[in-house]
Image 1: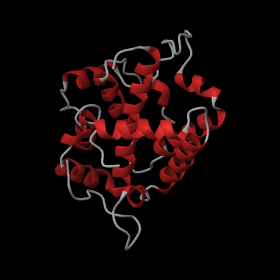
Image 2: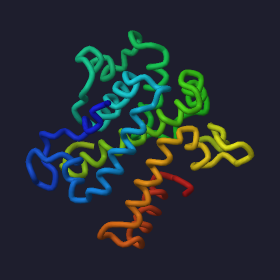
Image 3: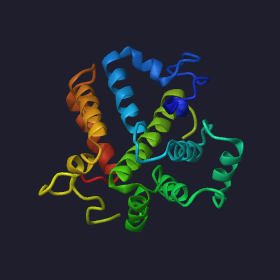
Image 4: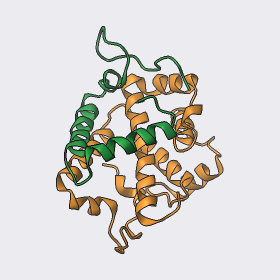
Amino acid sequence: MIDMPGCWDSSLSLFGIEGESFMEALALRPALQTKYAAFLDAIESSDTVPERVFLLCRARITQIHGQQAQGISAEDASALQSQQLETLSLSEQTALAAAEKIPYQHHLLEDEEVEAIKLAFGEAGCVSLLTALAFFDVACRLNATMTGGTS
Amino acid sequence: MSTTPRIGSAIPGAPSEFGTVMSHTPDIITCFGELYAEFWQQGLISQEVKEMTRIRNARITDCGY
């Protein structure tokens, strides 16, 4: 299972409470927390998109929001930051092309880019990946909003 | 922005829209539905305020919903 709350850096404070993560804050709404976690688990459990693709995309979206990328190597983080993606597989690059646009340029995502994702991961994989990208973005925005951090 | 659906419906004969596209991933759409229902039907924020902010968010992000 991907450590999904990676976008929510637990070292950051939420609602002014040092060390409390967003998922912990959701404990105030247990039913919402449970269903949110189940939803994230369903995305992560995709058997059509490799976990590494999710990790790379989450890290890149986190970087775009100016937050600390987690769950990937320093080499991968550097490659993502500098956009030197030649060492990554074609499918990883295809997914990252979409990830690059989701936070602030989602309307610039081209039909051809979505077609490439479908070719790489299939239609179900495309749905899983695009949903994951959107919620990686949501996670970063919530983190920034609730911690007063960068976004 | 595309003006035609990029992903086909997972339900034969049904048009391509949010629910039928998401049905390519039944587990995700099921969990999303349960989460969305919890969000809309419970909590301290009224549905009117939630809907107002949803519409504002949709307009800012140029979403047709």
